[in-house]
Length: 278
Image (cartoon, rainbow, N blue to C red):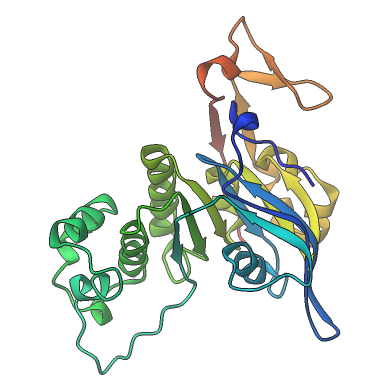
């Protein structure tokens, strides 16, 4: 199922692509015939209920799992920065943020400082990791991923355990990193409200791809509403204001002589009401 790439991306090879990928363990099919592309400067979000296969799909994209059928294509020498859903750290182990970031890649002190500065937490370098709030911890993990200078940033539930204000700030940070670094982003989230505000493309997963495309299309898709029920209805107040319109095929049609495709992309402004979901 194709997803609209950013303007001008048609000539850009995907950083990672899944082509009709199925993954099964014995008789249990975890994901079936899933296709997706992530290109540079694009944020693609996987959403779906628990057990829908979101994390499995990410692991397939990263090459941590081998598909039962279909294929995974990755750009040669692709560098990935991965922010896992959980990173277990022994609480009996005294570990500062700086030490955590220096454990694997052996970065320079200045590189660690730069990564923490880029994620807005330079003051945490000497703090014990066990004393961090949920939002601080996530920013540190993102800084850790950035030390690899990734072309693809992959985040599995990056706002888990973070309060509502912190969630919005983290999504804003992810957008800023995408804009500044030009990287592609693949993220998993169950937070429909923020995903719809922060994402270029959404893939609604329930072991297979139920629907996909731009957020404004997905929220109107019956498959999306069937899957999320009341949460989808609460998001019906979602408004997507464009400086252009789309014709019946979804192609961009300029408004008032302005062609956003020739301006390096089209600009979206999102306004939401409060959406609550379980």
